[in-house]
Each structure stands twice: as structure tokens, then as C-alpha cells.
Image 1 (tube, rainbow, N blue to C red):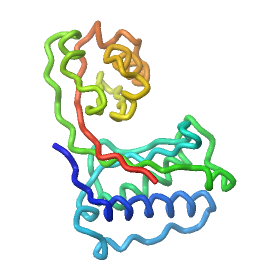
Image 2: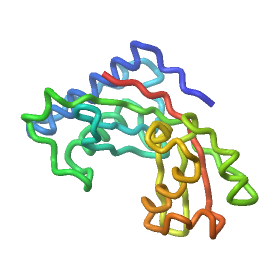
Image 3: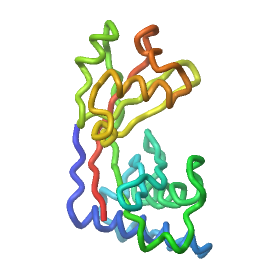
Amino acid sequence: MTLELNAIEQDILLTIARQALENSVRCEPLPQIKLDELPSALQEPGASFVTLTIDGNLRGCIGALDPYQPLAMDVQEHAVAAALQDYRFPRVRPSELPHINIEVSALTPRARLAYKSPQDLVTILRPHVDGVILHDGLHKATFLPQVWDKLPDPEEFLSHLCMKMGGSGDLWRKKKLDVFIYQVQEFQE
């Protein structure tokens, strides 16, 4: 399943994200989103991640894996969270705003991935296409499809994802995990 946001819809979401980023960092009220004035695709429930970078380096990234609000509102919420609530980074400072690039990833619904063995899992995953969610009891973690650019080897990708989840890098080899995949439509400023 793929998303089909057109260029106008993408531009609207990037504008929403930019306004949310700048207003939240400056401690100003967020612009009110008038859903009834937006294209229907942005009014529908949608899940997104907003990624902030400076000179290609990650500066914040937060999102949702499952839709629970209109896509436009989801992007606004996650732009604020990426700027102010990503525990890996200090809050974005106003002086950084001109240097930040915003990337929005709109997610398709997740699908459970059936596999029989660790090697089977490695061959089923589609690098640069699939975002991956690993579940192990109460622990879970995800990598967006864009992470394949930095970790192109499926075994290394899975090992890093296990560590992100709080497990050992070889957990995926030792234990059958719940694995879900999704795709994204990614666009940036």
C-alpha cells in the first residue's frame, strides 16, 4: 500500500510543520488548523513522523505508528515534539531555526510480517522500502525506511533496531519477535 499525497498536500503539511516548529520554539501559540479548509486527505486519520536535521545531521524525530487524529494535526503535534521533546537532544533553540530542514514521513498502516526463521526474516525485508517495527513483550522500536540509507545490511539493520528496543543486538537471531512493516511517503523542505 502506498500513499498518494500530491504536491499541494505535501506543501501544506510542510507549512504546518514549519509554523509549529517555529511557534513552539519561540513559545508562541500554535496556529489553529482549520480542518474543513484542508484537502480531504489531510483531514483523514493519519500517522506521521517529523524529522528535523541540520546540515544532514539528525536534530529530532518523533512520530506515531498508528493513526489517531487527522493527518494535518498529527504533523503539527510531531513537529512540536521533535523540536522540544526528543529525549536524545536538547530543545531546539530559536537561533537554530534558520538552519533546520523539516522532513515529513506519512505512514501506511502497519502489516504483520510472517517469517519462520531469522534468515527468512532477513530475506523478506525490503531495504529502502519497508519501515520495520519490532515488538518483544512491552518493548518496541521502529526504524523508518530512510534508516536503510545508513544501515543497508538487513542483519545490521535488525541488530541496531533490537538495541534501540533495549535488547541485545542479536535478539532477533535468538528469539522470534513480532515484526511489522509499513511504508512511507517522505517529503521535505
